Amino acid sequence: MHKGHLDIAKRASRLVDELVVAVTLITSKSLMFTADERIALWREALADEGLTNVRVAHFEGLTVEFARSVGAQAIIKGLRAVTDFEFEFQQALMNRKLAPEIETLMIVTALPHLFISSSLLKEVARLDGDLDGIVTPGVARALQEKLGH
Image (cartoon, rainbow, N blue to C red; front, side, top):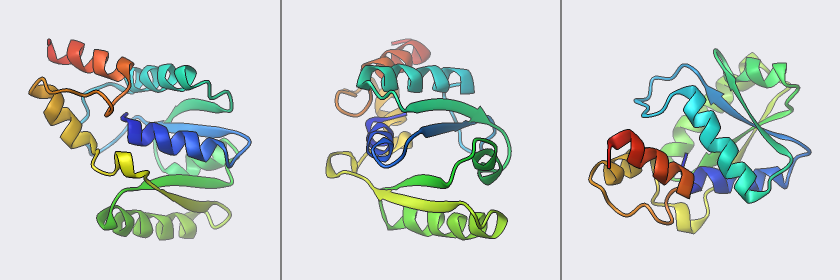
């Protein structure tokens, strides 16, 4: 979780009564943290921001099925670049086929976070680079511990 993710959550929380940050238990991505660790990092960051209408939950399986299970009316995604849009557009169309009652909303990243990606921040962390402004203090601490820095 980086500040770009947190910014999308903050902005999305102003649009809805309740926002559920969904942490998947199954992913094809190479993750540094377990689902429980990612949930704890999200909760810490959200508490630090004072976001009282946001909660974090984990799920397995299809995102639209999880959205249905929590009574969501929309899935909110963050977009950084054209490549993000192409992937998210295809996923949104599939989700519409699977759950036509659930909308997909896309929020464009804020300029200060445009360059941030999880893979780049992991590389910076591995090489003991400065993560200030890229991740929250809690995530920076967890990365240092995980990497033995």
